[in-house]
Length: 236
Length: 280
Image (cartoon, rainbow over all chains, first blue to last red):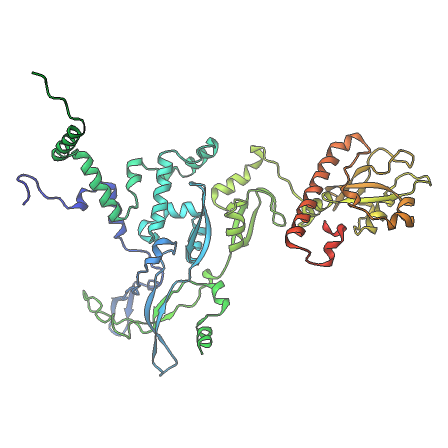
């Protein structure tokens, strides 16, 4: 039974605001990759003299857990049917992304990564002029990869702590100027892109630290200490 | 049976170069829903029958623009903006740091090269830097007479180079400023000449004077030689060229040692390996 006077707050409300915003961002609708929106939003029906909304429904995709440790640019699997020749029915089909291993270079971390990518992801990287720009600029829900979020957090932390290029101050200054728009405070960068399971542990640890050690644990430690080093009885 | 079924499933290799991204659309059009009504029939088989959207002009494989950060042989000099095939640009130029994407910042950097004091070295042709490296790593013999008097001329050099497999026009050869005569004690000593490629790029080439009478006598031809003549430590004819000759000799020896070690570890691959001259 809850103690009197304390109101229960769910864990999603106890997160820092920056992480709550991140969770909200992840729930936003993602960009379409496997299908296209209709060409026109409205349609005029001449026979009825009426204007209709053009029906629009995305093609449902299947989430693949492997996509979380690569850069697939939002691609997923699609399960459905394919038409055969006229009058011959359909064939059940599973369309899956074509993934290759490639090496990419991060300017901020000064590191090479071997990453499983699709051609679409490489094209997106080309369009945003580089791996760093793609990771930092793309909306979080469109990255669709825990690995990309982890790399982004490392980049943000390295820039916030000014830890990039420790031996080359000129290059450090150059890079910090180039990516100045993405620099955020260190406290926010620590929380960015964490998986909700990791974030929960982090929050619980912080709360425990703020509370301090419980009195029961303190007394137990004191008792064990006294057993190890018994004080001699006072002489009367 | 298995192999045939697998082969039937594999798409043509041409497709991979074009687009591996799957873009689908419904084979049958969506039903017009009533106002305020959600789609009800999306789970039916009819609504889950898809077909591939054909390729648009934008999605066809294109080249990418890159700005070179250093000299890339056959492609350009520092600061050049070039268009290359996508994967070559990504994985051969950008990932190793030889170039960067042609972003507005990179283009601005390329324009302000002169202000930063970066020298732009250009060569007249694609193969010119390779030829310069090739000539540096070799020693050519100048087989001249010990008895008959001579003064070194351009055609001497041209004909000796040609006999050793290097065809150079006479206009391209630039001899040292000092005239060289037969009685200067030249034999066994090295000089460096300049060979102008396309009249502009200067290649340095090392020559060694060797006595013709001694070489042509049958006694020396039958003699077994432990190591080839061009491995001997060089002595410069002109003192001004001594430092450069020693440096070039070190480069030659490095290549020689590397090749010998390869033969020792891997063994002879062909009879051509036995020819010591072919080692270079």
